[in-house]
Length: 371
Image 1 (cartoon, rainbow, N blue to C red):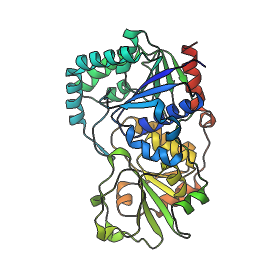
Image 2 (image 1 turned 30 degrees about the vertical axis):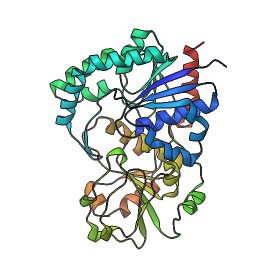
Image 3 (image 1 turned 60 degrees about the horizontal axis):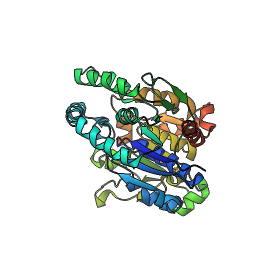
Image 4 (image 1 turned 90 degrees about the vertical axis):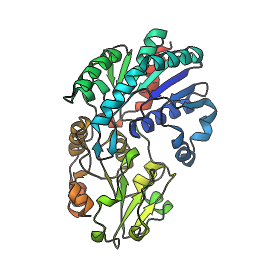
């Protein structure tokens, strides 16, 4: 089989971009022993420990490398539940100021690397390089940043949105995931299946593996790369006699006196932890929605700030997931019973795209370019 090298630029905004793209790249490398990849992202290597747990990493570690490269601004977050639009504006201006030098250095790197395909999740910046070097390019994502920025009234956001729209137009093919916002700036698009990490264990196996007790409900706190501050919570209302809080991934710092009934499991295969849990408490994001679907875990979701993706994710949650909305007040006061019951009794109609093999669709799209 022909040797193919993938050069993948992955957004550092949250964990959803890197978790899904890295999952797809690793599975493609496993299926194609001659293929190699470079992942250009502020994130990536921190997932290696969880990959060791799932047994994937050892099979491909010699065929993938990581570079700390920032190819988009995203949205600056105060935490998982709040955005900082003023700081985002400042970062946009800073990124634009340094863009030409970044473009030059990344172009020189890719000239030497000579990839067969440039993959972006979900920046428009790599398409400038792909177009210049005449390398086929793929977009992978459920939104484009021009759409996100166009939502805000700020002149800086609006101008930047128009600039990014022109860059996205240089992309050869947009692979649009479910749970998506409108993707209009990429000329040729294809809807593909749901992409995300999957559990390796059954629910019974996962609960036993993590030492979960019978008769106790376990609520996984999943607030992504930015976390959530423990001071928001009214700890005098917390009763751990029948419930446990589960924390994986980002370390959540809680004073020792409040630590009763809190289970911390770092460096785990996160989808297995999801499967072991009775519920996941989260703010809507692509990564947690896809992995919750594959894990079969009901979702209690709360507001995440004025982010335009939220509307589309909530529409999917209400129609295609066992889920229920929980207000910040109820979340922070540990009033979870009503939302939990509502999630368990909700009716769902599964999107047929959730059943499709997104990784095969991505691989087939790459092969179409490399005939």
